[in-house]
Amino acid sequence: MEKYDLVVRGKMVREDQVTLGQIGVKDGKIAVIESPDAVLVADKVLDFANAYVFPGTIDVHVHCFSNPNEGFIPTSMSAAAGGITTFLDMPYDLPNPISNVEIFEKKVKQLEQEAVVDICLWGTISKTNGTDQIVPLAEAGAVAFKMSTFETDAYRFPRIPDPEIIKAMELIKETGLRAAFHSENDEIIVDMIEEYKQANKVYPKAHNETRPPVTETSAVLKLMEFAYWTGVKLHIVHVSHPRTIDLINAFKAQGVQVTSETCYPYLLLDVNALDQFGPKAKNNPPLREPEEVAGLWKHLQDGNIELISSDHAPWGAEHKNPGNDNIFKAASGLPGVEIMTPLMFAATVAKGTMTPVQFAKVMAQHPAEVFQIPGKGKIAVGYDADFAVIDPDQTWVIDETRFRSHSKMSPFHGQEVKGKVIQTIVRGTTVYDGEEVTVEPGFGSFVPGSAYKGAAVGGRNH
Ligand SMILES: [Zn+2]
Image (cartoon, rainbow, N blue to C red):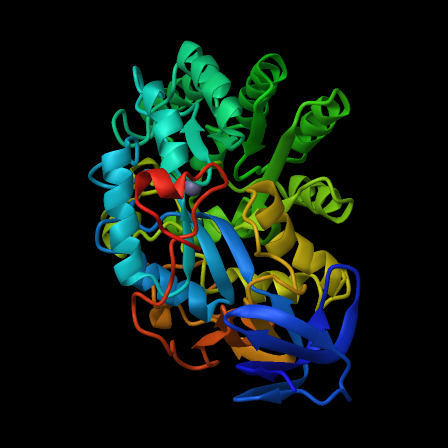
C-alpha cells in the first residue's frame, strides 16, 4: 500500500465542489484525493474536521522592498500567517527597481535564503531605453511585467511614456507573459494636487478628491486600446471603480485579453475611512464613495473581476504620519498580507454572499491562471500541496501591533473577524500552525514565470 508523507482531512474546497475528504500528499504534491472513509497510510495526519481546506491564497500584488526596513522575511512570515502560500513580489524596490537581469538574479538568490512561502518575481522597465531587458528578464523567470502611467518616483516607479509602452507591449507579447499597469492619469492628478495645495486643502479626503474616477478610467481606456493594437495580454492592477470594469468588459467583448484585480480595501472600506483613519486609509487609487464600492462588489459577484490582491505596502509610522496634517505628505499603501484572506472570507463566505468555491477562484485559482503559474491554485491531483485552512467558527480581533510585517498601521485594527486561518501549508509542510510561523527563512522557493529558460541561465528546477 502506498504510504503518504501527509494526509490532510477536512472540508476540501475543490474546483467545482466542497466535499469532506482526505488529501494524500507525497513529495510536496497532491497525490490522491479520497472520501472520508478511505484508508490512507501516512507519516503524519492533520485532521481539520469541519474547517475548510482551501487552496493556499496566491497574492499577486505585494511590495516587500518599497520600504527597505521590510524585505522578504517579515512580509513572507506575515503572508504565511495570513493563509498566503505564494505571492508575486512587485519590482519597485528601493534602491533599485528590478529592471535588468543582474538585479533580478540577485533578488532570486536573496529570496531563496529568506522566503518563508513561495514567491514569484515581477520585472519592470526603466522609464526610457529599457525595453531591451524584457526578453532576458522573462527568460530569467520574471512572472510578468509591471509598469505605470503615474509617476511615483522617476527612477524607482516611473511613468512610462506612450512610445515606450507600445514597444514594451510588443516585446512582452512575444514572451507570452502579461503586461500589468498601475493605471492613473498622471497629468490630471498632478495638476489637481497642485491646485489643492495652493488652496491649502490638505485634509484627508483631499486625497480622494484629487484622484477622481476619470483619472483611473481614462488611463485604463488608453492601455486597452494599446493592447488591442499590440495583442499583448493586459492586466489592470488595483481597480478601485466599477466604471473601470464596465470598460474592461467592453474591450473583452472585442477580444482584447484583459484581466483585472481589485484589492481588499476597495471592497471593505469607502472614502469615509479617510476621515476616520487619515493616512492609515491612504492608498492609490484612493478609496471611493459607498455606492461605487457597491458597484465593485456587484462586478465581483458577477465574475467580472478575476482576482483579489492585497497591494501590501509595508510603510511604517514614519512614512504614514510624517508629523503634520498634510495628507499629500503621507505614503500611499496599506499592509495586507496577514489579514486579507480572513477579512475577505468574513465578508463573503461567512456572510453567504459568495460560495467557498467562488472564494477559492478569486483568491487562488484565477491568480494562478492569469499569471500562468503551473501546479498551483487548485486542490487537484498533481498540484502543489498548498493549503489555507480556515475555521469558519472561530472569531478573532485584528491587532496591528502583532503584525509580522514592519508596517503596523491598519484601518482594520480592532475589527472582529469571523473565520480564522488555523494552518497554512506550503508543498506539504506546515509554515504556520495557527499561532506561530513554523519554518525558517529559506524554506520558501522561487517560482519562475512561464517564459523561464532554466537550463540557459543556471538550472533551477521547480
Ligand atoms: Zn502596488
